Length: 241
Image (cartoon, rainbow, N blue to C red; front, side):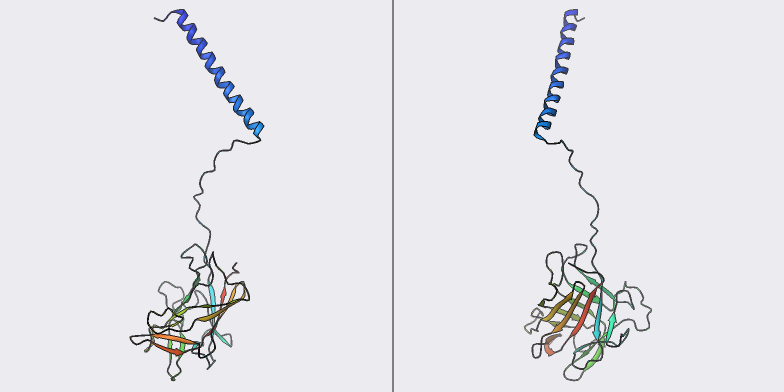
């Protein structure tokens, strides 16, 4: 059994420890006050999902211009253009301008996509017309991709014009599986890039270069370059940076 002197020693040691701890806390508080720095707990990491969403777009193709190799189908016309809107008659559109998906900057529209709405439209699927210089003319559904127009790291300033590659699928064509304007055609036959002019924060005008630099390459077992002019507009559903 411990002696009374041992108990007294433990009691005095406890008092000393408490005083030492209190003095340390006071010293820290004084130092923080003198330094003008507040002790702040670190913020917890944010677990919220990104709110970035890719915009959609409306495409307008002239449908009655014989100088153009690519024309609208004449449906949903405003008198000059065939209008292709997202979720109208099975059309889907997207500008990969944010980190929601690829952030590639590409502009895409499809006229035949299995998951789109309004597939019971009387003229579904929407089509484009390809008019070749040799007289062949055909309507075909399409997946069209205009590359590197707008994302979080690059933009075309309003009023500026740049060269870009345009890829146009032609799924019902008897001649081509697709047409590409630009150097990257996957073959030794190259085409000419299109010109993309940004006319407003939400609008881009896409045109081929003047002939003879308006060549699009018909993708097939024997790739062939044709002088095929394009001239269409892309309007985003919201202004972009």
